[in-house]
Length: 277
Image 1: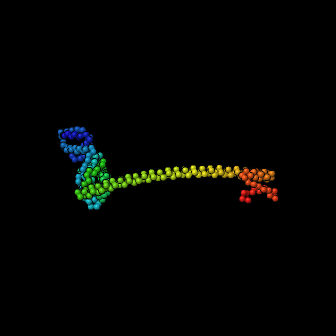
Image 2: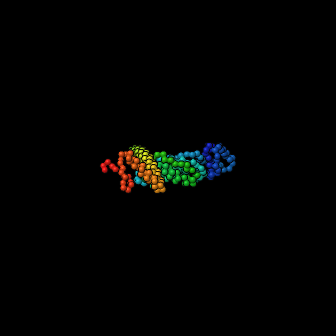
Image 3: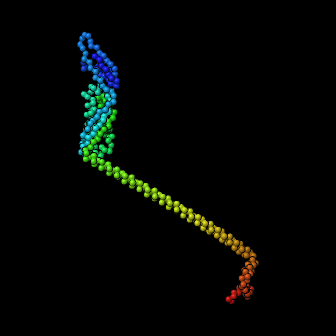
């Protein structure tokens, strides 16, 4: 008897229905004994490559009683051939059943809006629900993907209307944002112009104030100088009474030069005589 185990596969050898050992890829030849009882040999070949299994068109009611039809792809690989053949009758049928029940449990506990918002949740839920049981019969669940998610015809029309409404609302929102941005830019430009104008006026006012302060300071210095001169004259007159008489004569000369006449009073003090007198 001859058996061939292909590459990426493994063979399980049974003799008289009893598992004997695992066979690696290659060709195996067993000769029948010349004497004694013959042995019934069988080799079950198990594929170790990554494979996929499709759950087609599972119609399920959501939490809000909407019928949806979902198809899920489950990718798996046999990691323990002995457990895959000995622990369950058919590991592929078991994967199909576990994935089917996981999808039903998930969709039945979700409303339609939640399902539509993230289809990846279905894939994650199926993978997590099937992964641990599959490990017990020697299978590793690699990933699960939603292949199709189909809704009733009237629901699709409503969804298309909703999507169109959402697109229009989004377009209006974009226009409104652009309008707001334009207004903000205009307001900022006007604010900057107002600030520049106020700054210019402030600088002009500061210049005027500085000029007035300088003028007042110069006038004050002039007054101080005049007052100081008068104080010096007063001090000089106080110490020299003759200077007062000299000042009077200087005043009389100035008056005479202007055309006035003077008479000498009884007290000896000259007085100005006006034309009206």
